[in-house]
Image (cartoon, rainbow, N blue to C red; front, side, top):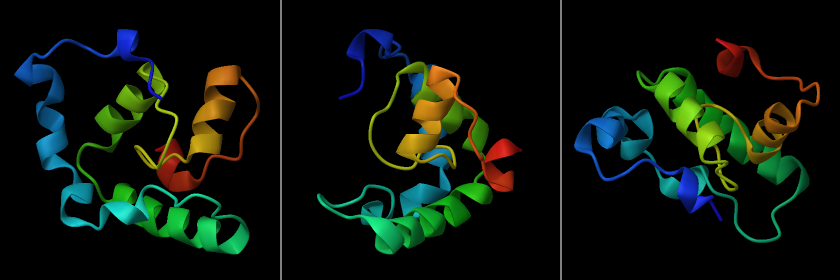
Length: 101
């Protein structure tokens, strides 16, 4: 669960970037894995979601939001759950080029 105390208040300016996200036109199941999904199936789904993120005009805002609130699930701002965990814990991570931009 996201750490709710880290979420900004209900000010439209803080959330408006979400209306411009490329993911709004995509299947949400692409960005959040079903329970028990592992291995190649999960990797391929994550990669498909990240391709959508790569062309998104608000990828930076999305990534910053996901890290600030410690979003625990899904692909946000071109980063998977594991990649965000690595960033937040300071572990070296192999961040894909689209996410590193």
